[in-house]
Image 1 (cartoon, rainbow over the protein chains, first blue to last red):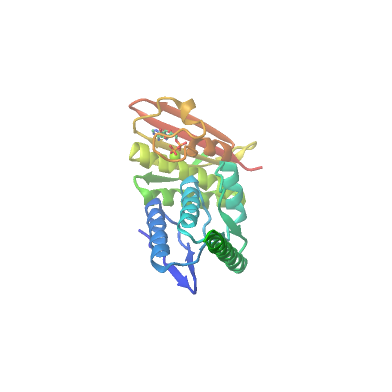
Image 2 (image 1 turned 90 degrees about the vertical axis):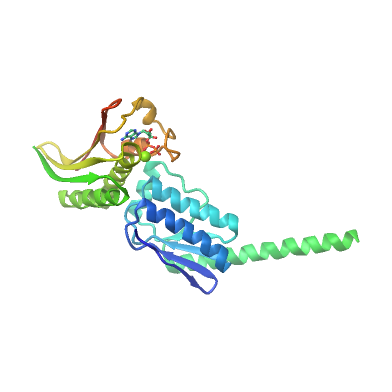
Length: 139
Length: 134
Ligand SMILES: Nc1ncnc2c1ncn2[C@@H]1O[C@H](COP(=O)(O)OP(=O)(O)O)[C@@H](O)[C@H]1O
Ligand SMILES: [Mg+2]
């Protein structure tokens, strides 16, 4: 079984899939990522699939599920480097990647992820401020 | 002319990876471009997984089609598993008995130029897929 490292770099978790993943390893990776999110309190997750040349319905579902689950736990996720042939195949296969943000490469992905994290923090601050205001007004 | 290039035994998760990588290599050698390589390898990944999940074991045979009019690749995925009771149902999007997405069979049909499904209850399943060079 292949074990893919989940790296924490500043506030982000970075996962680079560099080998052909069998189904079992893919599920293990999903588990590892969610565990790391809980443990490290990372603010964002980036999955680099530049080296992945086959994404079937199993792998596609796994990537989609990771992004959705991470979002539920907090951090936004971005998938970078999907090869054009893989993107075409996924669309033809009929797998919808709704809810998954994608970027062309690592650099663009990191920028986008930073923006997503900042937007989320702004939103949270606004909500907090509104709650405090409401409390004061009611008091 | 049909020339068998390779036969891959399929019994576990690792064999699924082996089967799809082999088919990709052969597709490339036959002359398919990147997108077709991805389509063919993805289709084989789906069918090989079905063998492991629903039939436990089977095999994938990769062949080159070399007729004057039509050149391309043919892959036969075969098992002696329980068979598919209702092929039409299995081919419809979202149908699954495995708690997965039910996209393997209908997806394979969309990715390939031709797909033949033979199956008999208690005997097994044989799925033949083809892609032709344009
Ligand atoms: N080789 C096989 N042997 C027996 N049943 C199969 C086989 N391949 C597919 N099936 C049946 O067809 C259904 C649809 O397969 P598929 O489209 O790949 O979706 P999924 O694998 O997600 O269920 C499966 O759930 C299973 O019931
Ligand atoms: Mg399937």
